[in-house]
Image (cartoon, rainbow, N blue to C red):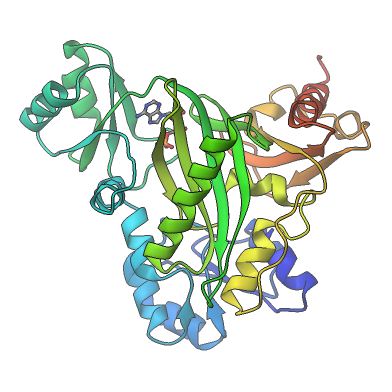
Length: 359
Ligand code: AMP
């Protein structure tokens, strides 16, 4: 989606990843398939472009560092380094006074015991690095869960988080330009299924005071980071109406996919504008919007009925061009607008139901 926006504005795109025939590669001018730790290829790539950005936060720091010696990389590699590890991210956030879920670093079973005693149960044990969509996570309900959850880490560094009995999950997708200008899409409400984002709607159905506070947190975080590009801050809204940051995505985010169409400038166009040094575009929504993810499971009953899904003319289909629909794999999404966010959500949800012929 970033490459599509770049091509629309006349930019040429060169993409680098270990895979071939990637969704970005299908749209880009040039696709390099090479390992992230092949620093000679990374340098060769960096010499061939004017500016670099990334859409995937697990790009190793050494790769970004090697590229940044030759060409500007936005957002900065240090921000990537901080956000790609839950321990570094949460330590940074709490050290800078941002509200986070209670957490402890865990490297041994004894440390897990101590952490559980401090935080209480239920709690969630998560690998510190390389986790997303609930991967590498175990929920601990009682003492008996500690041993198996620790064993499942297989020696990886971890953090224990208090389990938040949240009322709602929301995110703020925002963008900061090279000149320090800032724009946001307000607050987006997110619903998950099996730890994977299922449906997003905007504006979120929360009090204005909370919405303003969430945007303010995102703005000051972008400022503290000296951020350039699109960023997403995910929050839990607790039942007593407090905001806690769950995580930061240093890139356009799945919840922000609902800006692609319903907004004057999408989160991807903003990323492009920021990294290319252009003024930011308008984040205005033409109408309340919603997005429903299409994961591989949608294919379980055979090829989905695309025509039925888009039989509502207000519904738009986005497929990423991934070759194989595996369970849990994000394959695309549906977006719609409505008179209210509820109506837009209802539209995308029913369109998704129509995809499966059995319905
Ligand atoms: P994550 O990969 O950390 O974003 O987790 C994916 C999803 O799991 C979140 O969006 C929540 O729905 C749930 N989750 C993660 N951490 C917690 C927590 N500490 N308390 C309650 N739910 C959580």
